[in-house]
Length: 84
View 1 (tube, one colour):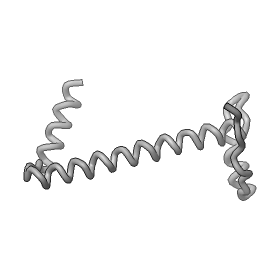
View 2: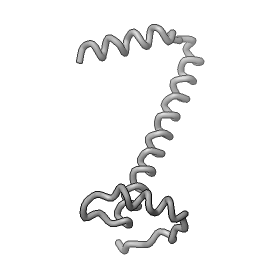
View 3: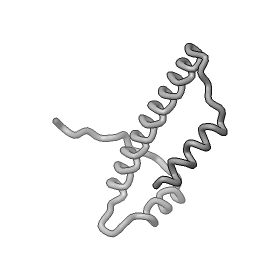
View 4: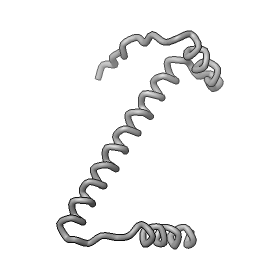
């Protein structure tokens, strides 16, 4: 598969300097931008999946009439954390 390019990005000089100031050793600005793009894509996919699961859960609760209080859920989460 051939690689392709992302359109060039115009930014304020301050943003470019801020990005350059956090580069790791031997890291280029291009690799930083690519990694940032990949991470943001993954974050958005995860957010969409989370919202989708939440909406499906809401629909299932409406269908079955089975709801759980926030206190009950938080107690269950506390118990899970205590067990770790």
